[in-house]
Image (cartoon, rainbow, N blue to C red):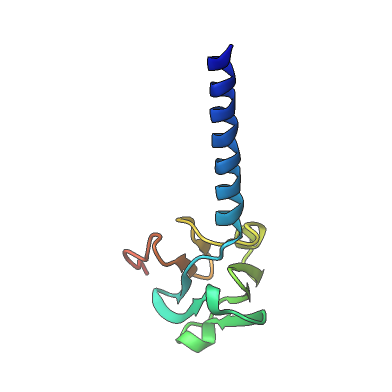
Length: 126
């Protein structure tokens, strides 16, 4: 009887500790992002240092290209593609992203938002 009670307490403790760790790690904003257009680095944003949300507009004209218009919205610890004039809008439907290995990609406009520590741009095909 005593050993069952011991294991129940141990199991409950592990579940509680794991739950607290998930909540703490979920709320902590991570790292910075690098924003590429046509394979060229155009901006780097430290998501942890963001105080007020702001907008980044990416026009094809700025990088010598004539195509594409994208708008990124940045808040503390997260970023999203707010607008893209591409035909499919997959990058917009991705929503807010706060880290990890999955970048935000607008393939028709050749815009990539990569999280530091994630996968970078390996090659540019054009």
